[in-house]
Image 1 (cartoon, rainbow, N blue to C red):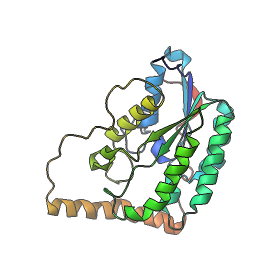
Image 2: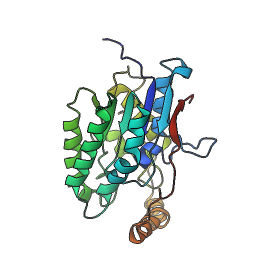
Image 3: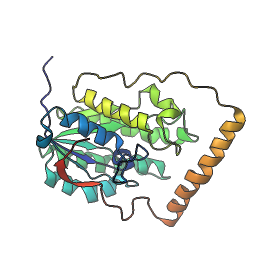
Length: 261
């Protein structure tokens, strides 16, 4: 098997998934995230001074906002590798126009491919076994999954299939808010991207975690009530008031700069 050509520049585009929400905090107050972990692995393939990384992702963004706010800067940066993740925030909202989401995601991928970049896309995880009400999202998620897989037929598109990875049914791969990844979840996504790009496996990112200790019914109830109060309530307030968690927030790495993770 031939060794993949190293990348010397990487631009991450997307929402909270790519920003790195709920991973370990860095000294500057930003979350680390799978994209930072990926950048560190890619930088190790070349001399550190020869590798540059930018992360334009901002939490809460819809695919139209990602396209409108991040796409032109990403194109201008000219990264050899671009990861593009978006659309799930749209799917989570009632009345999602999935055809519009597909059109915007497809146009974004096409614009990035026109630069000559290798583009990484993602399928969503399956929410039905870990998230109350997840079944209502499935028609849109499955349609978007099929669309992403279709885009993956392009020779410079790599698709990371998170949907079929049963390990993401385990709540330990998710943060307390049940929407963002835990540090272990971010570690696995970074490895999944590396393998999708043809790198040799460092570990089996799909492997299940060791069995967890059983949770009592009262403890589960307390956890569910805490989740509703701390996470679901504020999310609903933002939806009603038309606000987003990313309003006014700049990207954590707006420029292509050397990265030593």
